[in-house]
Length: 189
Image (cartoon, rainbow, N blue to C red; front, side):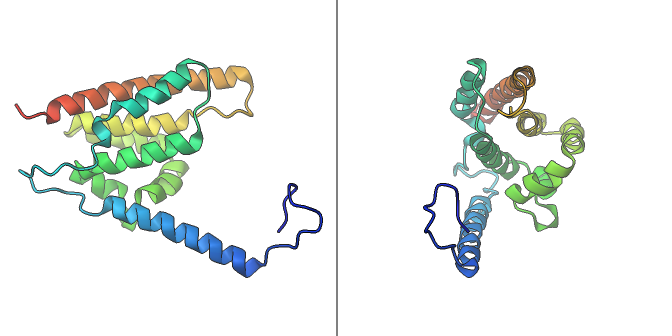
């Protein structure tokens, strides 16, 4: 396989070597996802802290600033952050954990298959779950997923990108507010 940037004399990469490299990368990603899910439920009265991404508003604030200045956020950066955030949220809510990881799916697999196939239905399900309890975390998960729907595409017309940024900004702002609420609720009294 050659690319336009390769020299004209470059030999194609053997298919077996490319397939092996792809398997190694996939294995590394899956291993990291499994490690992120390990030890997800601390003991009820444990002082041990989990990932704490749910309480860190600095990343969301960075995405908000970038969006407010008219720049498109990176799909990779926001997607990776949302993946990590949802893992943290699910580690604090057993019902969400079971929902996201049903059928043995990792969070990244859930996002790439179930959510990508039916995003609005998945968000509606989380909204219904929020009515049943643990509202702050479940609504944060809803807005995190909602943000993934509005990542602007640089290939779209400027008006479409502006609208996507406006909708993304709304989801990120709501997410930040819910993160602050979750942090306040988790503080010892």
